[in-house]
Length: 82
Length: 180
Image (cartoon, rainbow over all chains, first blue to last red; front, side):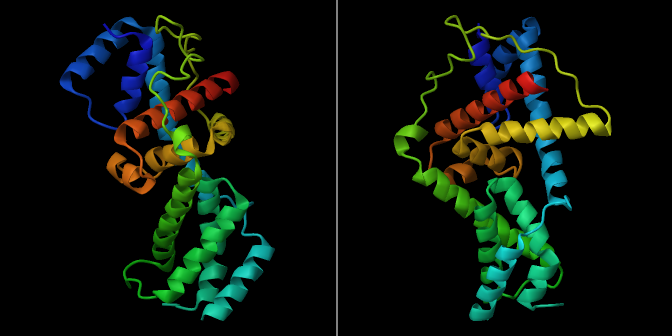
C-alpha cells in the first residue's frame, strides 16, 4: 500500500511518463481512499492547465515592451553584422 | 516578404521580448536572447515563405531560450542537481509519509477576475522557485518538451528530471495553497 509521499511522487511522474500497470493500480487505490491526494492530483492538473494560459497572457501584454536602451543596442549590432 | 532585420526588430521585438521574459524571468537575459535571435536570423534568412516572420523568429528564439536555460542549469554545481529522492521532502510529509500539511480544497478560478488573480499568484510562486527548477518546469509544463529531450539538453538523468519536476510542482502547489 502506498503512502501519500509515494503517491504524490507517482502522480507527478504520471504527468511525465506512462506509469506501469502496477503503479497505476496502486495510485488508483490510494486516491480512492485519500481525499488529500485526490486534491493534490487535481491541483497539479490545474497548475499545468493554467501554465499555458499564463504564457498566452504574458505574450499578449501591451504594458511590457523591449526597453529602448536594448532596442538601440540591438539596432547597432544589427548594423555592424549586416 | 520583408527581410530587413530592422523591420523584424520593429514589428516583432516587443513580442519576442515578452515571450523570452515570460520564460527566463530576467530582463537582461531576455534582451540578450532577442538580440541573439535577430543576429542568427540575419545569418540564415532563408525562412519558409509559408510561415510568417514572427513564427520563424519565435522558433529561433525558443532555441536561444533553451540554450540560456541550459547554461543556467549547467552552471549549477552538479552536487546541487543530484537531488536524492528522499532528501528534503520533510517539509511536505511526516515520518510516516503522510502530508505534514493536508492539501486544502481550492476554488477553481471562475470569472475573468479570479482567473487573472490566479495567474498573478501562479507567476509570483514561479518566481520563488529555485531558478533551475523553474527552468525545467517551464520546459515541461509550458513548452511541453518530452522528457528525453529535456534530459538531453540539460544533461541530467531521467530520474533526476522526474525528481526536479516533482520538487517544482510540490513547491508551486504549496505556494499557491498559501496565497490562493
